[in-house]
Length: 367
Image 1: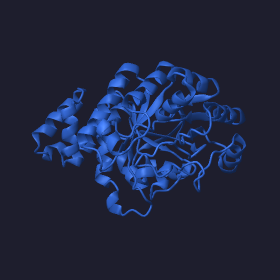
Image 2 (image 1 turned 90 degrees about the vertical axis):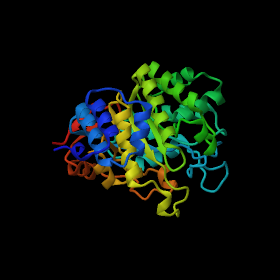
Image 3 (image 1 turned 180 degrees about the vertical axis):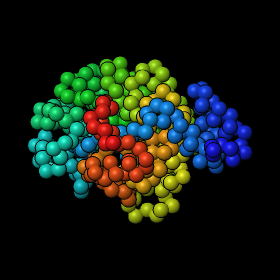
Image 4 (image 1 turned 45 degrees about the vertical axis):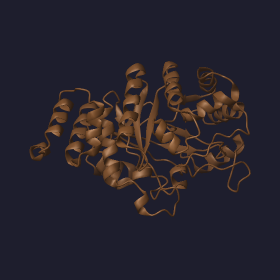
């Protein structure tokens, strides 16, 4: 028995035929999927694609989020993390201050530092280089996944170095992967509306292209919410898919559900669970050349993450130690989760938890 037997929409049936035949979906298909009310068939198709690619395995890692500075020259409308230099709550950590924080919070089995921060023009590019160097020398067994494409573009501007030269400097001192942030929505109209005062569409894609050419594998994101059109979301996915066709350097697509602009914002300011599941399922169907789609529990919660694992997601992120950016904007979810709870969450969805490293090498399978 298939849910499609009750689906009266012939267009959905046509899309289902394309998916099952391994044919690439078009822009028009993606727009239709964002507008259809048939979430169950959409989720079923995404689940079929995921099972074909990954079986029942769901991946996670033990990661620790670090933030060297929250001082930022940009004033993007969606960001509640940034501060001006000298503003109450602003900070720029020295390596020793970062060591003190890490030593207090790190677990013996941490595998990854996930590092992002503000575009702080009050320190030179060498500050960002030495921050990575110092961490890698002190914690040599922890993989360093650091900086967004927008941060790399910022370092390019303050240093006068090319993207390649910036990345090579950072890789030489221990950088092993970029983070996926900074994409937001790859639409000029959206970026103007949301005052995205950082790397544009071409810059975001070119930084990742350059990283892939240097042998680096990276994640990528989409920050979706009530601002952009569904057409802009689909165009975002297609631009990622085109770059992946060229480089095959993206490891995972991460839909990020936009959080309210204030912790006190009402529930109506948030995306619905319906929209969160739709973004994951459509990401899985449109990005046929991506291995993984992530359900980011920090933004959508642990229970909805369980549902997402049956609707196209094959990655549950990781344990995290004190996430700050989404929570600065008002996320109501946990700022972290234990390994035991994450394994339970995945098993509760009828899936097989697999602990991984940053490059998706399997470390332990929890049968």
